[in-house]
Image 1 (cartoon, rainbow, N blue to C red):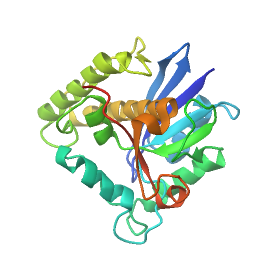
Image 2: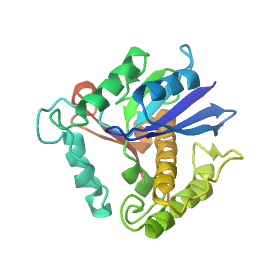
Image 3: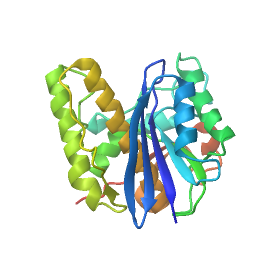
Length: 252
């Protein structure tokens, strides 16, 4: 039984996006690819090359792909602050009037046109083609049992670099002993650069790996070990109002 897990750290405007591909083989996840693309067309081409039309996969996108509200923020956005504000892991608000809305929503529609249906509920370990919205900051807090987010996105380069090194070490030390386990390939760990642009590229790739792992965690465990942030638990309204999937804490 093979299943692929794609993580997309989507650039909300015109920034490059981090891309990760994992595959479930012989009872473990294997890292197939880490990449970065700028144009949406190139991202979609990468997806088409990574997942053939008849292959089962779940694509986890760090971006709001469902935005029904004209102003304000979605309930899913507000709930990140309710549940994860104390960890500094609340997300930015999303509404139709913000500059990124067309880009992120249209990306979700492109995935739907390829057969990747929104999966705010899921039958664990059932093969299919799905997409979900995820958010790396609270996922990292929960997967690695942290007291606050790793602050690798803002601040001085040397401080961001140290936080990114922590993230990579957590990935190396913890995800291989989680369930499902992740087996890392020979090209990992990544070199953590010392300059701003290169550091941002590595950040995008590591974020996409977290997205892909959350996709696998959602598929493997479903609601048993994941939190669904949105307005109902049966998934009916979530498909139009938006939702975010976040793993429960997995370590004592």
